[in-house]
Length: 263
Ligand SMILES: [Zn+2]
Image (tube, rainbow, N blue to C red; front, side):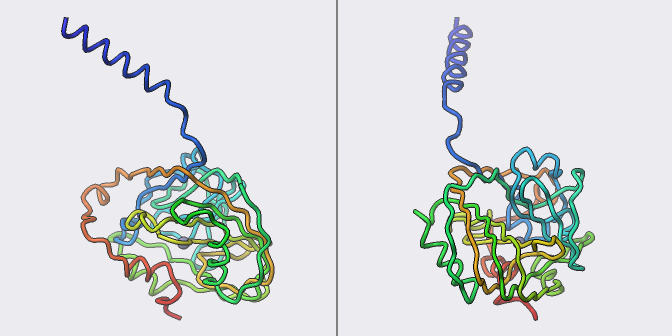
């Protein structure tokens, strides 16, 4: 009798779950966490083929921290530390990335800006709240742009703060191209990078990388609000036994921003 009651309860529970509406809005899907990447967990866990089921647009890196990744219109590009741009094969794996299906809600014409900080504050003024996630696709002409890529690593992996000391930096002048990226709220600390994170690819598809600084001459920004956030957690042994008790905010700053970047 008790078993029957239990079964009835389970049936009704499942039934009521199936009545729930599908998740409303767009979703940012992320592989692993920024703290894992900063600690040197560079073994890919998700194939690009698999990642494409969660998005046609986004940024990240590849297995062994082999360069910067950028996806748009369903094409996944890799910018290696020699500055070359490659199409990422479906069987390649990513240890850290963020993707979505890009469906812009808003398009704005941008005013010229003399720095990345100025561009970011111009974008901030158009957002209804900084407590949501946003995807950005910015097409523009840049009178100058500074990019970087990271060299492929081999186990035992050094921390990302060590790797960026040897990163390749590319300073381009008068370059047309596209910035792809996200803005995450401050509460993602430890999981992703609070604020903006952009990767760039030139219109001729010959240059790109992680954006450090830029001067925008003219451009248009398409913005997609993302109401949902999903994390695909690795099964990698290094991730499973890592200690994430301490979040090192300064290290995240050091690996993402120009201010701590060696020239
Ligand atoms: Zn990046």
